[in-house]
Image (cartoon, rainbow, N blue to C red; front, side, top):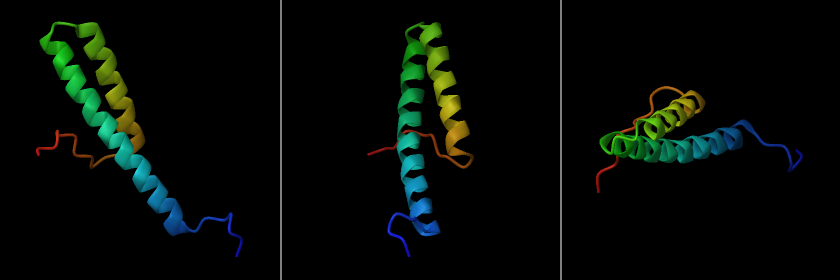
Length: 70
């Protein structure tokens, strides 16, 4: 087996890490978009919501976008 070759488990783990990172960015964009709406900055909010939508297309369905509570 070649060391440079990834097996299916490695690929799945790497994809899960990327999806998790994108989910964090998605949540941040949604919070920022909501704040922009509350400040009346609808142009910025629209851009942030578009960015968030693009991330959902990358991540896929089943993503919980609610802000985490501590």
